Image 1 (cartoon, rainbow, N blue to C red):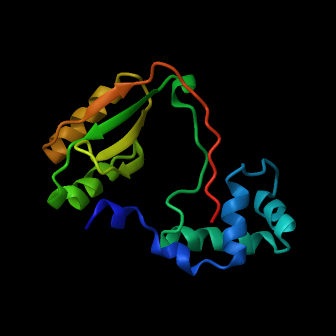
Image 2 (cartoon, one colour):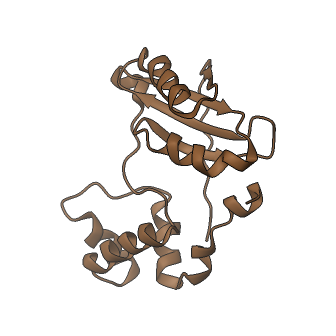
Image 3 (cartoon, rainbow, N blue to C red):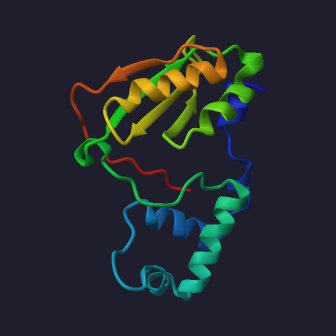
Length: 161
């Protein structure tokens, strides 16, 4: 499978207007209130149960890879690092499954480059970065290159579907 094929999401082709409105609307945030799904639904003209069911389905079909809060690990006393690996193309899917099985791994991306697998590690302690990278190396037999964050930039990024 090529990098381009892995990065395509066929599930997006089957989205209807409500699915697209949910995805596009929630990229800007999720309401913090007693009934957040109902609040989202009110903006879209449906009830909260419909919104929740749609999100569950979007996760099930792979149109969404994740739905939940993002925490700033470093502000909570944890560690955060960008990591890269050089994975033989024939082993890419197997290694991706191994890496993604670690709960500390998020945002795993395929790249058309010698360093063809990139992911973010978020751990409970700063020392956890090296420990987790070591566990991934032992599981995969491949080196994990960790890159510490020197400065943080915020880039507002939205993907309209």
